[in-house]
Amino acid sequence: MKNQVFETVLEQGWSDNADDNGKNERLPGATIVEVIQAYKLARRTAHDMAAKCAVSDRPPECNKADAAIADATDALGELTLAVSVAEWGVAWDGPAPKDPAGRDWAGPKDITVGKHVMSYALGGLGLPHLDTGMAQDLFDEIAQRIPASANDLKQFRQGFRYDSVRARGGPCSGHSAVIMADLNGEPFRHDAVMWGGQKYCHDHNPTNELDPERWQVLRTWARAGLRDREVQQWIVDYWLRKVWHPTLERLAFEKNVDPTDEAFVVARIWSTSKGAADAAVKTAGAQADPRKRIARELVSYGHERRHQMMQRLGAAYDSIQPGN
Image 1 (cartoon, rainbow, N blue to C red):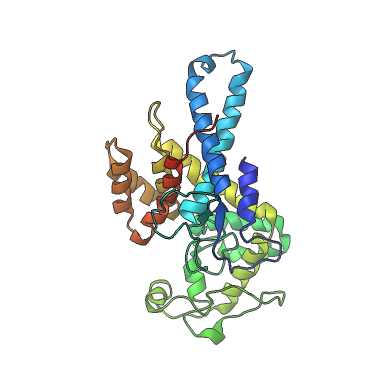
Image 2: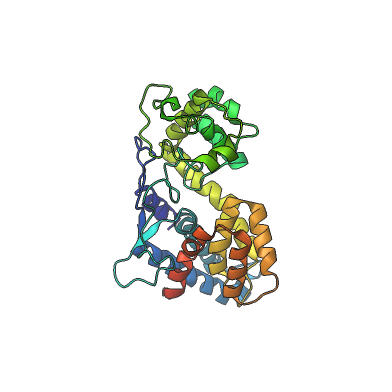
């Protein structure tokens, strides 16, 4: 199931010659239903078999149950990345649950909103908008997959800040300053070439420096990497490992409580920063009511525009019954 969801995600804008101009991404409602039903069933099965499987000589069905919950958990994590983090919509086949965002489950209108499989021109790199240390791990992967990039990417290995490179690349200095072809002469076809404004430029390039060549280098190899299917797989697996699984562990699932709705929200916060996620969960404290916990975590996080989008997958989760 994890692999099926990954393929479905790629269908929303990826190819080996794609560029960063994605918009209106919507996952099929059938995929959402299938994954949530499988996840709820796997959780229920694991709970029912807990005593039977808590022995050294485990029956074979325990291994099957373990595999089912692991696969369904990863698939649900991929949905979390696409819907809660990247703000994608859902194309429901029939009656749809109420959209907390009040947008009829629409996807992002363009790359100035949400995140996209080919993101490199605005916000960060790849579907999670990787930045700082996480982006540096991505550079290592791209250098392995595309050896020609290795020397050029060395300059981004320490102290990397995506917006610092972008703001100095021309968007704060006039359209003519932005180099619109990569190192091999292929035109950049990405949107939002000049997106920013006075506050953005003040925050990320206060001394009004100009280094369009460095921005060209970053875009050249980020785009080349994102066009590699194996790099896309690495990005999703990396996010699951670095954000989704730690989120579930941080929330410490209890036997008779299902805080999955909270995990959808906390994972989004963690994608911004682990510190923000820790602060949000700490703010929720010992509160037992999941809705009240989420409300406190959202206040702690800020970024009010994102709040309703972050609760979309929870609305779907609550409306779908476990499979059989």
